[in-house]
Image (cartoon, rainbow, N blue to C red; front, side):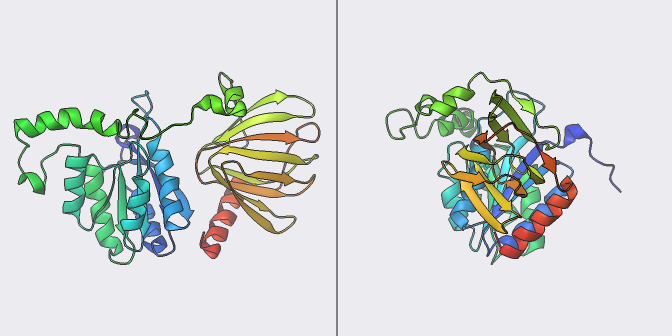
Length: 317
């Protein structure tokens, strides 16, 4: 039996999502990756329309890489019926190189040649064992490695020179010539407000940080990492919330209602209403309570995660 992988060996953080046709295969691949010795973390973003599932993963992979060399490399896995739709929409994001792979040879080729960082799979055509072999080949193959396309031999010098320039040139598309007009951060007053802020961890909710900008009534800028959970809780005062960026799902257990929130969405939660939250992407939001902020937990994290997983599976979302 192989020795357990050290922390240093676990060099990948993988975000995964699927549509309804891809969910069974996504669940099998997520389970396989969580046991993989090179994978530090798998964030399962659940099930959505194929283009929304692809976008949820791509947003996380598209983020500029960390300057910390010890941070795991971020990659993504997206699954729909054919594998084509999710790859189309994942590739709309900068620094995302998604490829539909039907065999381990496809995965080796696209890693070697294209530096593929998002693996797209067909939930209808690829069985779980084959998908696991594809994922293993995709994780094991470095950029410009020998591959079937090179005849299994190292690439010749002229191709190596091409590979030297390719990553920078790929990342620069689209360029700054007006083909993709980016909205500057300064366009949003609240985004400007967060610049230079020092955030404090939300100790009872791992993955969360907040910065209180007014004490009473309390206003705060809050951010949570993708995959984070707020267990069921309530507050003495009601609160207004505006999502600045990201995606989250809120369950109001008191009213037996749920809400899917994305950029620009607003939600008011009345005083005392018990609610739990799952963050499907890295999310930032502005929140204002009607009085002084407090929090009362109504369940623990493990209970919340189990309830959310069951709810998402039952709803197919």
